[in-house]
Length: 149
Image: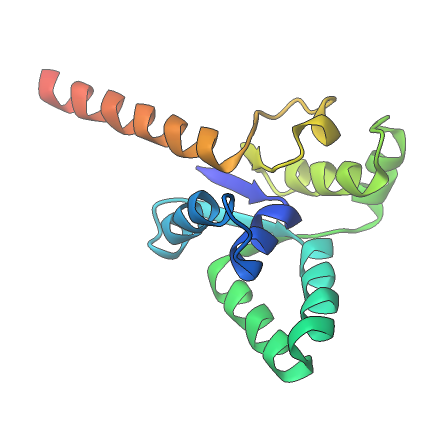
Protein backbone atom coordinates (compact mmCIF):
# COMPACT_ATOMS: atom_id res chain seq x y z
CA UNK A 1 0.00 0.00 0.00
CA UNK A 2 1.40 3.37 -1.08
CA UNK A 3 0.32 6.25 1.14
CA UNK A 4 1.17 9.93 0.78
CA UNK A 5 1.60 11.74 4.09
CA UNK A 6 0.49 15.38 4.02
CA UNK A 7 2.86 17.95 5.50
CA UNK A 8 0.71 18.41 8.61
CA UNK A 9 1.02 14.71 9.52
CA UNK A 10 4.82 14.85 9.44
CA UNK A 11 4.83 18.09 11.42
CA UNK A 12 2.55 16.52 14.04
CA UNK A 13 5.24 13.92 14.70
CA UNK A 14 8.22 16.25 14.48
CA UNK A 15 6.67 18.89 16.73
CA UNK A 16 4.92 16.48 19.09
CA UNK A 17 1.56 18.14 18.45
CA UNK A 18 -0.92 16.31 20.67
CA UNK A 19 -3.32 14.63 20.34
CA UNK A 20 -2.24 14.13 16.72
CA UNK A 21 1.38 13.05 17.18
CA UNK A 22 0.74 9.52 18.48
CA UNK A 23 -1.39 8.14 15.62
CA UNK A 24 0.80 9.92 13.05
CA UNK A 25 3.88 8.41 14.69
CA UNK A 26 2.31 4.94 14.55
CA UNK A 27 1.79 5.35 10.81
CA UNK A 28 5.35 6.51 10.31
CA UNK A 29 6.52 3.44 12.25
CA UNK A 30 4.68 1.26 9.74
CA UNK A 31 6.64 2.98 6.96
CA UNK A 32 9.87 2.46 8.87
CA UNK A 33 9.13 -1.24 9.35
CA UNK A 34 8.33 -1.68 5.65
CA UNK A 35 4.68 -2.58 6.20
CA UNK A 36 3.65 0.24 3.89
CA UNK A 37 5.29 2.55 1.39
CA UNK A 38 5.26 6.14 2.53
CA UNK A 39 5.43 9.08 0.16
CA UNK A 40 6.12 12.71 0.85
CA UNK A 41 5.53 15.46 -1.66
CA UNK A 42 8.72 17.29 -2.59
CA UNK A 43 7.13 20.49 -1.30
CA UNK A 44 6.65 18.83 2.10
CA UNK A 45 10.41 18.38 2.34
CA UNK A 46 11.08 22.04 1.56
CA UNK A 47 8.39 23.22 3.98
CA UNK A 48 9.68 21.02 6.78
CA UNK A 49 13.25 22.15 6.17
CA UNK A 50 12.21 25.80 6.24
CA UNK A 51 10.20 25.46 9.47
CA UNK A 52 12.75 23.21 11.16
CA UNK A 53 15.61 25.58 10.38
CA UNK A 54 13.75 28.41 12.09
CA UNK A 55 12.99 26.26 15.13
CA UNK A 56 16.05 24.05 15.65
CA UNK A 57 18.75 25.43 13.37
CA UNK A 58 20.13 24.42 9.99
CA UNK A 59 22.25 21.42 11.03
CA UNK A 60 19.46 19.70 12.99
CA UNK A 61 16.96 20.53 10.24
CA UNK A 62 19.17 18.84 7.66
CA UNK A 63 19.42 15.77 9.89
CA UNK A 64 15.62 15.63 10.13
CA UNK A 65 15.37 15.81 6.34
CA UNK A 66 17.96 13.06 5.94
CA UNK A 67 15.93 10.84 8.26
CA UNK A 68 12.76 11.50 6.28
CA UNK A 69 14.61 10.76 3.04
CA UNK A 70 15.66 7.36 4.40
CA UNK A 71 12.08 6.45 5.30
CA UNK A 72 9.97 7.95 2.54
CA UNK A 73 9.86 7.99 -1.20
CA UNK A 74 9.49 11.45 -2.69
CA UNK A 75 6.57 12.36 -4.93
CA UNK A 76 8.07 14.71 -7.50
CA UNK A 77 6.76 18.14 -8.30
CA UNK A 78 7.40 18.80 -11.97
CA UNK A 79 5.71 20.63 -14.82
CA UNK A 80 2.99 17.96 -15.24
CA UNK A 81 2.13 18.04 -11.55
CA UNK A 82 1.90 21.85 -11.54
CA UNK A 83 -0.16 21.94 -14.74
CA UNK A 84 -2.57 19.33 -13.36
CA UNK A 85 -2.77 21.20 -10.05
CA UNK A 86 -3.68 24.41 -11.87
CA UNK A 87 -6.74 22.79 -13.45
CA UNK A 88 -7.71 20.61 -10.47
CA UNK A 89 -10.04 23.27 -9.03
CA UNK A 90 -8.89 22.75 -5.45
CA UNK A 91 -9.49 25.66 -3.08
CA UNK A 92 -5.85 25.61 -1.94
CA UNK A 93 -3.14 25.41 -4.60
CA UNK A 94 -0.67 23.74 -2.20
CA UNK A 95 -3.17 20.94 -1.56
CA UNK A 96 -3.72 20.61 -5.32
CA UNK A 97 0.03 20.21 -5.85
CA UNK A 98 0.28 17.61 -3.07
CA UNK A 99 -2.70 15.74 -4.51
CA UNK A 100 -1.35 15.75 -8.06
CA UNK A 101 2.10 14.69 -6.85
CA UNK A 102 0.42 11.80 -5.02
CA UNK A 103 -1.48 10.77 -8.14
CA UNK A 104 1.58 10.97 -10.39
CA UNK A 105 3.59 8.90 -7.88
CA UNK A 106 0.97 6.15 -7.71
CA UNK A 107 -0.29 6.81 -4.19
CA UNK A 108 -3.42 4.93 -3.22
CA UNK A 109 -4.36 7.04 -0.19
CA UNK A 110 -3.59 10.44 1.30
CA UNK A 111 -3.31 10.87 5.06
CA UNK A 112 -3.96 14.41 6.24
CA UNK A 113 -5.48 16.44 9.04
CA UNK A 114 -7.05 18.71 6.41
CA UNK A 115 -9.67 16.61 4.60
CA UNK A 116 -11.52 19.76 3.51
CA UNK A 117 -8.48 20.72 1.44
CA UNK A 118 -8.86 17.49 -0.53
CA UNK A 119 -12.62 17.50 -1.20
CA UNK A 120 -12.03 17.10 -4.95
CA UNK A 121 -9.70 14.14 -4.46
CA UNK A 122 -10.42 10.92 -6.28
CA UNK A 123 -8.07 9.16 -3.86
CA UNK A 124 -9.36 8.11 -0.42
CA UNK A 125 -8.52 10.70 2.23
CA UNK A 126 -8.06 9.69 5.88
CA UNK A 127 -6.75 11.28 9.03
CA UNK A 128 -4.14 9.29 10.97
CA UNK A 129 -6.67 7.66 13.32
CA UNK A 130 -8.93 6.64 10.44
CA UNK A 131 -5.96 5.20 8.55
CA UNK A 132 -4.91 3.13 11.55
CA UNK A 133 -8.47 1.77 11.86
CA UNK A 134 -8.53 0.99 8.14
CA UNK A 135 -5.25 -0.91 8.43
CA UNK A 136 -6.65 -2.92 11.36
CA UNK A 137 -9.67 -3.88 9.26
CA UNK A 138 -7.42 -4.93 6.38
CA UNK A 139 -5.30 -7.05 8.73
CA UNK A 140 -8.40 -8.76 10.16
CA UNK A 141 -9.64 -9.54 6.67
CA UNK A 142 -6.26 -11.01 5.74
CA UNK A 143 -6.30 -13.15 8.89
CA UNK A 144 -9.79 -14.41 8.07
CA UNK A 145 -8.77 -15.26 4.51
CA UNK A 146 -5.72 -17.12 5.75
CA UNK A 147 -7.81 -19.13 8.23
CA UNK A 148 -10.31 -20.15 5.56
CA UNK A 149 -7.65 -21.35 3.15
